Figure 1 (tube, rainbow, N blue to C red):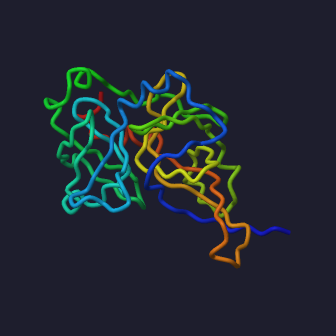
Figure 2: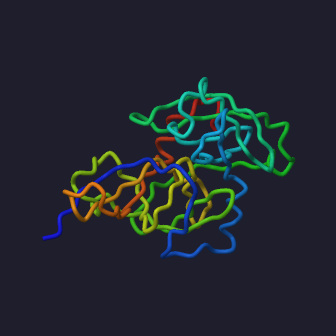
Length: 225
């Protein structure tokens, strides 16, 4: 019998194609909300990802930024690098979210007018979704947590299928129909065919995203819209 071991890693670099689903022409409209996040000095592994919500607010995964006081992040948006301040910081073990603020007045008018709403409905298994970064978008689907090994904590219940070694912490997961924000990519899960061989090839099976319902609670009331 083939034995599997389950692993968890944070997804932290650039988005690769999800392979089984192709982006649609209208999906690219979401790239305007996708941003890069850089530390000072810049991190060697490349930028983190985030989502521009509107009104100068940027949402990302907490582990992408780390401590804002230490990482001194900037947000690359519309070809500009704008310094970011922390509105609220979470942590990877509790709520893997950080809310940043940039100077909205420095953005082009077309971005000043933009708002990204949070989805109202909970995601359902099989639902098509879009993952967006500044360079591109890719399609995926919601999968049930019951599809994962029992060793995966059930608190990670909002998942998208993952058939490629894509790494995109902080990226937005969007409803493919309404184009609202379903969540923020936090981490991925993988299996190893050979438990006894730590060097055996990993097989990615799913990514967890922090859902809109958790984002809504995390957001300070004065910054909700």
